Length: 503
Image (cartoon, rainbow, N blue to C red; front, side, top):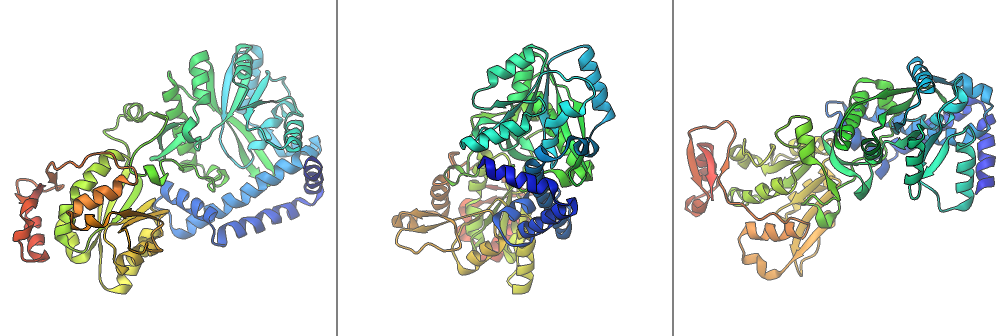
């Protein structure tokens, strides 16, 4: 493996740069414009962060990000074999960072620097070679490889200029030693840290952010900041840095995430440099626990206090294909009150037949009501629009060919539904619960409660009154008296004149 990497590295280092750039464009094009799950991840990530972008703009950012991801990989291979004189021409240090290196040399102090996942991040390991001033001892966390040859090659190439690699598995003590001796430690700024990270919103959606840097900075009272490489051309970059404040690890984490959010919103180069193809928000998606929050460390309350909010942002799109009968729709609304408590990040959209949608418009247990007309062309346009939002999940609450077809067209990341044992599972539903046949005779709300419990819902149903937004001093709709109405039109008329529903 080490010999193969060396051969590939030498080849990439000495072919014309235009040819290397062409390889990046070609592979990036294949990644984005040929249907695959990785491209969908990029489209979804970008659309969720920038919901107002048009489809062509989303694809442009995704393509540039894919191209630059390939460029980063090739630079990792080639940079050990590129002459230092060329590297010094291609990689620069910003005036601000040069000034900070001078200050640190004059008055050493421990520093932790977080490294965001930008295209030219590998160039940061070259700082000791690029800086005219001797840098303090610097260690950078990395994930060790199981393959001995690959591990040896990585250490040889990345440590060649004086940066020390610190294994995530074994080097927390080594990192502490660097800091206690007024050294510098670099940590990857990771929003996909799994159960090891702290769970809080990033761009409004839940992400598990690594907090190794913040915890060390809090405990050892270090200065903490961001160091990043801004791409200035093919295999060219300017390395810059910025400090940020915070008394606690949580405050530092929020401030660093906010810095990255603002950077991606305001700096187009950074937006294209960031690796959107990674599953940054892959958390709380395990089907077995889908309708609950399950994480080692949750810092929602701290987030709400830090940003002076009333509640968490609701930006995780949960779509529900509702029953055809308006009476059934009204009877199951307490289910969504339970989901809102269980998933305080969920943005609930109810998909209703067009003739039923107006009756529930403005209901407080949903952020949005979408009317699905019977006319095929118009219905298809609405479903295509919903698919373009890349929802996290779509749950079909009443099986019918039309509802299953809708779910397929919406193409959510996950689709949920249920059947009774003995029935054939619909192919269009990825996660399909099997319920006992005797449950057919139970009230609809009890059936749905059992279905959702199979996917993690623990919150009990709450039959407290459900209000409508912007309807004051109107009547009360008694959900216990649904049987007295002759048809859906009568129920609809009664609901439109009410400000709340009682159960």
